[in-house]
Image (tube, rainbow, N blue to C red; front, side, top):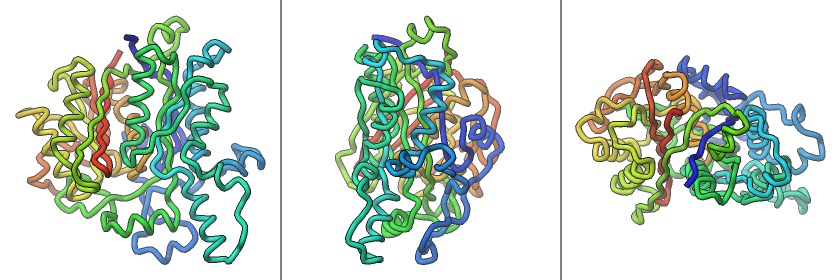
Length: 402
């Protein structure tokens, strides 16, 4: 078994178009949720989200590339570029055969889907763009990253709704740890902030019209965001031999299924995933100094996650810092746990725990230290990052300082 470390990170989200800006946003408690701006937004009842308003794909890609890249692929490629640049990894012919890509996404090229349906059904056109399928397919972003960097090992996409990124990163971790790969670009990307994307979620009645307040007594639903985060997971000895800077060690991972309800979460499934990740890392619960919660600000998720945390961490759980950064960057669905891993790394490297913003009043059903409204200094040596998805699919990851 090989040790696995993170040697590069990149992101594009509503807080910032890079890692440093995102971490600055976390420290400042900046909320990037605001008015949505896209065609037909006036037909929606929910008109807020964590949207990337100043994105300029033309400044980053040629016209021929843009013909192939949905917005989600553009976010993923930029995040991968940043991660590779920070890592300093040079992909030799031999390394290319032992390196790959695993990305998570919940919806793939949703903007392409929305635009194509509008063209055919609303505008009465009989033809769509010839690259519609290559743009909308879920594996497009992973494929383009592999192509750009010549990565010829495992390359695929995981789609498990809101747990997609943690599942993707967990599988990448397991491949490097087992020796099946030497280095993997992994994380997630999502871009569903369009009319069809929001309208579909409105039907579930889990969306807030005024803000994201995880674990708060006044919470009234989730707020969607968009963006991506990509990391380079690398075998430790390989990274050390080339003198790479290590951001954190990936210590453990676990995934479980509730095998219960398609939308309602289950405490047992979440608790088993957390316990499994701790066991995989060889750590006792008291070793964890911070939990980045799934924390969607829906009534069911927050209550069940708090109960699962109490079960896993015992009497000390009320003193354990547990925050949800979705309150700042929104819920990025399949990309959310990738962006949230940045908060976990910040806690380990910088000793700063990101806050839960918008917190107004404690909920007796969620008796947690949610780090309300202001970042906190703390010494943290190990962190747990949670992701729980519709379908009862749970994925938890443990990082530790190195």
